[in-house]
Image (tube, rainbow, N blue to C red):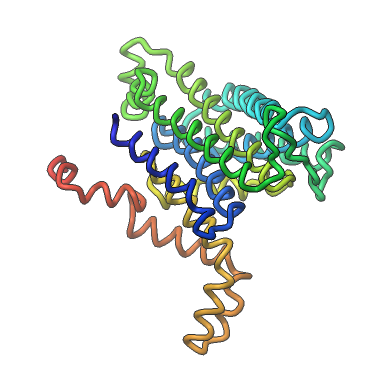
Length: 326
């Protein structure tokens, strides 16, 4: 068995036992949703070389679509999630078709502009609840049998969804299709000279990345029984960029580590501040929880300056085999 798949299996088994150790399931589910989101983004940036600032549109779009389908149309949770993924993929097809015609900063700005258009649509659309968001989404029963209102049942479903999404990313990169994507990233003119339709490959990768981001967003709706505007704001696109850069662009485990760090800091920064205030006597730390964006910015600067390849990328670079290649 491939070592990476074996590591994924061990990771899944470790996750399965976390609730027995007293770990709050909702917290872990949030990390897994964001980790899948970061993996989807990394598929595009790390292996195709396309920097999108519009992935919040797919994440939030699927969140709203799944929530509406489950709450208003009465679909089962599995069909609601599937509907969210389809909507995200369709959005990705539209945005990608427009954006891949440009490269570099122009590609990035087109994705950002399209995502903002989607955000303002959600702000004004009647079915989204406006600034209040779509609240009270029922979790329902998986396949009509498993009651997802039980946090533990939902927890194991989220683990399965994460593993499926992670495996899709891994299999895509390791497939011949993924090799072509790597060739496009490394030397696009050479890929063209070999006869590859690079626009088609970029579009397929963009749609796949959007669909996986939608899978994460739809799952998050079930976890928090709501979909809000924060899921589709441009800050969400910035957050997933931060997660990927911190963990390591172009690595399989990097986005997961980055998501873990970002979510942990966002949720525990207040507790960390209180501990620092009590231990140092500096009362400013008491307000650290209100300055989470400043802390995130400092971490981003530190990673860019000291860990150019991200945490996982730098660790991999220290391995003897990789040092010999350098």
